[in-house]
Amino acid sequence: MASIETITQPQAEDIILDIRHPDETEQRPLIWTGNKIICLPFFQIVKHVNELDRRQSYLLYCEKGIMSRLHADSMQKSGFEKIAVFIPLP
Image (cartoon, rainbow, N blue to C red):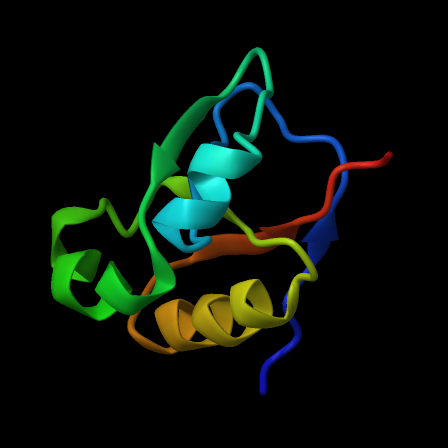
């Protein structure tokens, strides 16, 4: 697995991909001002990855960071240049 950076403070141009299951996003929505958040469940990423701009900066978010890291690696291998895992500070 290539080195995937972990980000705790996004830049203004970063888009956060909330890849949690829809039940999780409904129960505990990610509230983060200043960045666009796209809810794209982990089981839908492969289906929709070609709809995303490979030059855009994306931060993948899930509760523990494990699924985010796996999918960030996969996206990086498919040509996404600016991809990282988002773990907000408590």
